[in-house]
Length: 288
Image (cartoon, rainbow, N blue to C red; front, side):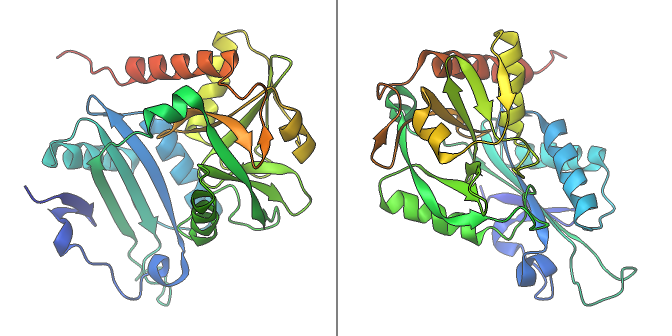
């Protein structure tokens, strides 16, 4: 069966999908995207993804006519067309052609869904290595804190990490504050207290980041959002990364530095288990 995508109001075969050569997302990276996952055919925290998308669209002047109900229906239609229950989805939204009047402009909406492929099981059992990103995140960049299609610097840093046999690269700001990973948010554990950079750093308001914050409350675990430095990273008892695909991913090494005792820590394990439980609970379809 040919893979279907949802492009500008229509379900079509992937090979037939075409985007205008004048599209601002293609030419200038003037667009947004959301990476999502479905479990049992239900997209995990879809409303949170749509809220973030709409908030970023307003902040970055990416105009579109879509209602959330329309996007929810489009996603359901796509999953059904591809016969996918466990899927990785991507929703991309651009302004369309930029060199026309706003009245003539037609945004581009593309939604894709492929089989969900989790990170290797050994990553969660033994933990992963990360490197320090040689690039810097500029707090005055208006796109910081938004999931834009101008993503190449992140991919370059991630490729550098992979070439060094690491799973991620940690970004710091131009004034040396810890920010996030290329594709993840970061948490440190010190003396049983969770620490993470505040959204104002700025960092992406991750869906998994928010979920971990809720989990911390449920597990009576203190969570502090504050500016963090490289020293905080090196002094942490545990470190883990989050996004909706990797869930809660333990870090046991930063460059040549060993985190804690070099094993997945107990707090990280509890949060891993709690995160999986939340996915099961929130993706359980209501019986008809």
